[in-house]
Amino acid sequence: MYSIVRIFEGDGHPASDGPAVAPARVGDLFGAAGLVTLLAIKGDDGALVTVEIFETADDLRIAQADTSRADPLLPFEDPPARTRTISGEIVFQRGL
Image 1 (cartoon, rainbow, N blue to C red):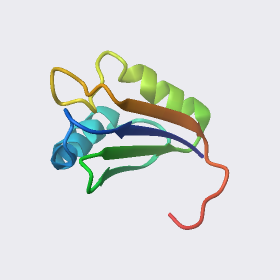
Image 2: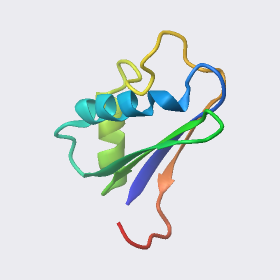
Image 3: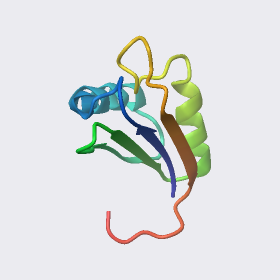
Image 4: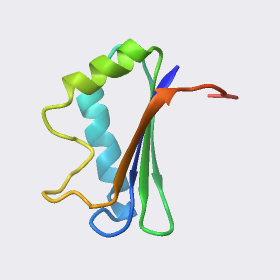
């Protein structure tokens, strides 16, 4: 399985946006092949983390290409300066 993780830190994307962000992203991914799950995690420090898990690397790439027209995870005009994206193969998993 493969995953893409987005980390939104600090000002500009309060964790309270989490409930709006996840359904928007699920809407964009509706019907995407290989989507296993999407998680939106609110941090106590104002951070927001989103995790998308796909069956294969191709599924992940296709989903990202299909939604690359605009970043649906940013429901505001000016994205926060401190945003990180990590993408890769899941090398260990228990559960899910």
